[in-house]
Length: 146
Ligand code: FES
Image 1 (tube, rainbow, N blue to C red):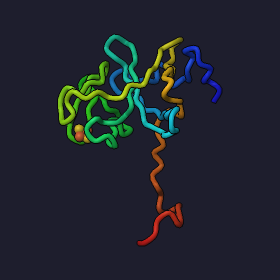
Image 2: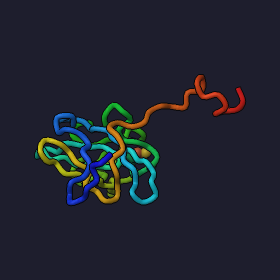
Image 3: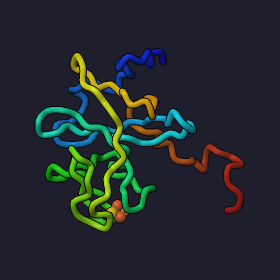
Image 4: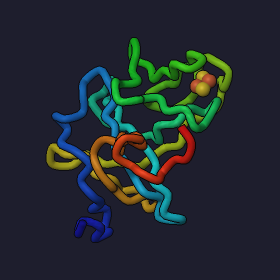
């Protein structure tokens, strides 16, 4: 992907139109340092700007906020595991077991009707997430037993 020219350019994540007005938009990034893939979300804020966050709860950090069907409920990001709520603009947990903790931010920029990833810590991988579960029927040898 040849969109990492720097100078605040960044890689295009999605058109602004693709970010739902009242829900989250799921995408995948890769850590520049270490190369791990991470799930991330875009959220449109009440002033029309767009915020980016890693898609993981601050309580149990392997739990995703958006599991493919959106994370926004009544204007807040909600973890369905134990019902923590996070402000979509600040990322602060306002209620729940991780109250006061903050989501990991991803810097994004809106330009010419599109949202760009401008965070030096992350590279854009794809829209959505790789949801292919390990399919036992087509992955011979990947599991023993049964
Ligand atoms: S894992 Fe999110 S609130 Fe517990």
